[in-house]
Length: 444
Ligand SMILES: Nc1ncnc2c1ncn2[C@@H]1O[C@H](COP(=O)(O)OP(=O)(O)OP(=O)(O)O)[C@@H](O)[C@H]1O
Image 1 (cartoon, rainbow, N blue to C red):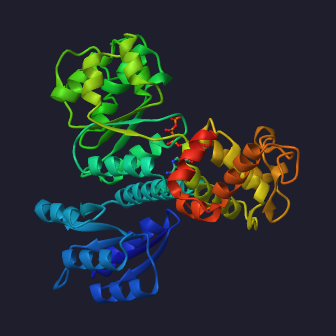
Image 2: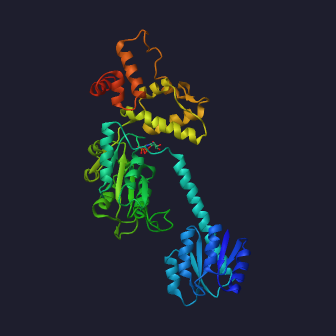
Image 3: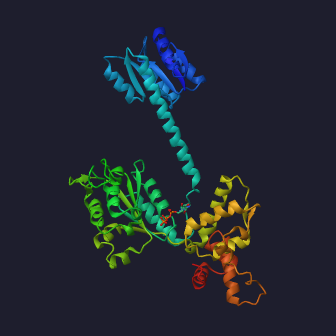
């Protein structure tokens, strides 16, 4: 690390320098605030030791100026032993730590180790954040399909209120992605977004994961745990696959939703948590309720603002946009130049039913980008089940019915058009007719 020492007393600068240098860090000295600020214009520092009393200068003012010039710098203030109030003020203004005078070399080394540990954590966090941002294609929350537009509108309006939101839709349609977006658009956007995956644990472990437990509550409870409800206090709790929440836990969740109260496993004291709940499921919750697997009161409590995300095959005019976004994203990530999809690929996309929805589309395109050796993604770059969808026999002049030809033509036009209106214009029919034909031909 590069360390700056700012003190008007040469002897203090010298003892500090020796302590810092024994830990292998590079030192620069400044006898005044003005000199320190000049040095900051030329070099960046990781840490600075600054005397609170710099002759006539005020070390607190200098602290603010140093942080303004280089916000990442960790500033440690040297303070007179009795001056605790000023030390507190220094911390309030953003000092990393303070060391009372007189100090020992070990105190200097201790605080340097703390700064280094902090730096390492910060850079690890930054790299994880970049990895996360890089690992996923950009989120696209637009749609040319009226049912999706309506769903998103409800979700975004609901986001601004504290209401519970239930997101329904088949697997891979983007329920988790939407839940995060709702949090991002909510008043509690700066607080935590905490996910609980309901089916991933046994009932006991899920209850403790949600509400926490006290030491000894069950065999593996070797220490107290706060639980995800407490972790989400002030923020959003996302309950993924709520349809699989065990019946025994359902009344506890209902109490949390209604009274904001819960108890840790093994501790009868009621606790309070102010969490906004978003729940998602690919199950038919009303059917689960009728079958006795989901409590009626909880169902109605969750079912206040409900957003249904349709499957990808019901969003033909969005499909191409997603496919293009994914192509660009994965090509850039793999450093390949891939300019487009061959027309039969687009036709195959339009014909396929996409049981895995957006997740499947993303995986198919990632795979195709890896496999393709040219600039264009071809049919043979797709998994077999997709390639096989396009029957080569359906072609003009081939021995097929007009209906089959029409279906194939509509599919292909839909696959390449930006939206339903554009496809209708190309086909020379009005959008309502195209909508009906799509339904009749099973293209929805
Ligand atoms: N709006 C979006 N824009 C771009 N990609 C998306 C979008 N929504 C979903 N995806 C892609 O689809 C994948 C699956 O999304 P997500 O996990 O949110 O689906 P899900 O409905 O919660 O699935 P499951 O029910 O299986 O949990 C994401 O990782 C992302 O790559």
